[in-house]
Length: 208
Image (tube, rainbow, N blue to C red):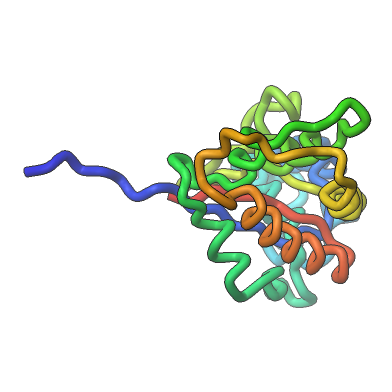
């Protein structure tokens, strides 16, 4: 029998209502049983709404973060995805070893000396919730395989759209997939424009 090759990961880009940075301290308090601050901020998550004061939250850090920042509708209903078509599928299942289109863009583009935000924002999107970048443990991995990679708030979304069109970066000549950077950026732009129209941010997740 041949060696088992596990399927590659796929990635999703979810609309978020709140910046994770604003929720870190309230989540830490909530895990300890003090839900006052998180309930002041988060309006429509049923799980957050149902937390009992004085009783520790039954969720780990990353699950709490996911429940708190998502763009829930009134009644706790998930909002529509940023894209239902080709962009979501193509950027979610990129044909590289890792399947991560954002990492691919980072690897095969180069900024000029006048551009610093392009890569910075892409790193925030694909790795901003790692302990190294966030400065807190446990917000990137949780129960049942939950993997939160990074995010952009709404201001970041606008900035990344601007820097993508700035012309202050180039595609490297050794790109391994012909047209891979341009295709990935085109699909990412679709998601960013949708988030910009809705006034929300984006959360990047990995699924196995």
